[in-house]
Image 1 (cartoon, one colour):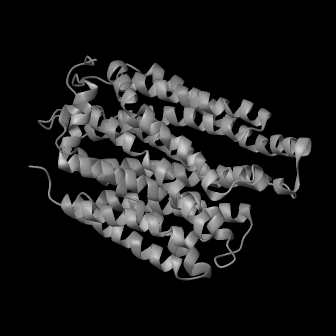
Image 2 (cartoon, rainbow, N blue to C red):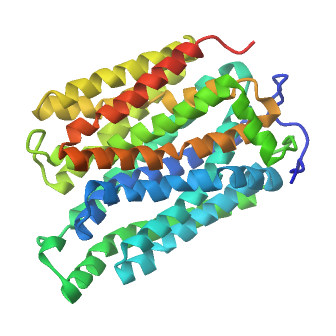
Image 3 (cartoon, rainbow, N blue to C red):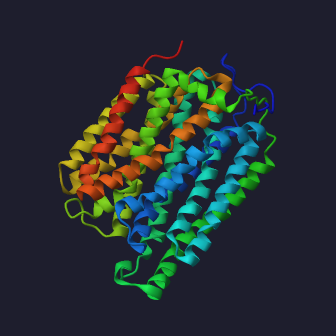
Length: 426
């Protein structure tokens, strides 16, 4: 069914844009929130892996359920945003995220891993809607010629969330691991242990639910601040028709691979640091290294927002992807601190990838930006697929280092896209 436009004029293909500078702070805050919540998965994966005695493949189902929401909700989320408008759409997404956080309570009381996965899916569904709002909106809040730089700068706030949330989460969640192991227990004792140990997870997400309720209230109060918003009417078929454009289709595929590679590496940092050939640390100590991975992305995005305004974005993307491959090779073939820090530095290479791939893929879409954003969000489903494949390789070979060949292959394709898209759309 065709979607009707809600307002008038919003960043057309002719280069016009929304003149609402005060909204940039609002968009930055949303990037911070959904980035931080997504990165908390890296903390709860080792927690749930121990509590439910999971192998790597089973543990990666956390990411599978979270990122599957992008495939399921991507286009419906874009349709919702078109009907409600950006501000009201953001409120809907924030409230859905809040519900997902609250679902951790029954999941903990039942000590059920499937219920945790269901809660994560609902939480991620809200994140998808918020992301459908933020990506095109930040592109429209300024001149088209600086869209790459502006989106990368906004992504820096996403990275700030991914640094702060895991740091706090590691202290609250991983620091609470008991002296006994779930593998040593059975029956009622095991159920009681799981309920007790998941309380730290619940308390963390209840705090997030309260914060999300406050943010949703603030956005609702300001729901009429955005003026001159317009969305082109379209159908589902028209949205998928964008995939006939080679540049957009290639870019969407690279979003799939990039998110998959980034999430796979982030998800195994704790277990990787615990390897005797790397650092041999405890879970809580290893969790303290997660912010360095995401912190590299934070620093790189601030640097990237400067470089991308002056250097061909495609060339920068290709160079960063090649750098990520080099770091993977070094980490997989060394030990100790060298292996640890070369892996963590991949975060620096990741820094400009998502916003640059997104903006390169969506160049020239104009009023179809919401449709493009919806399809891009479907491509984020790579965060569900690649980590599970990564875990399967690790389980099959018994070596996390061997599994690193998968993200390396993903980065090779991304490097090719950067070179392909090095020239702007005319």
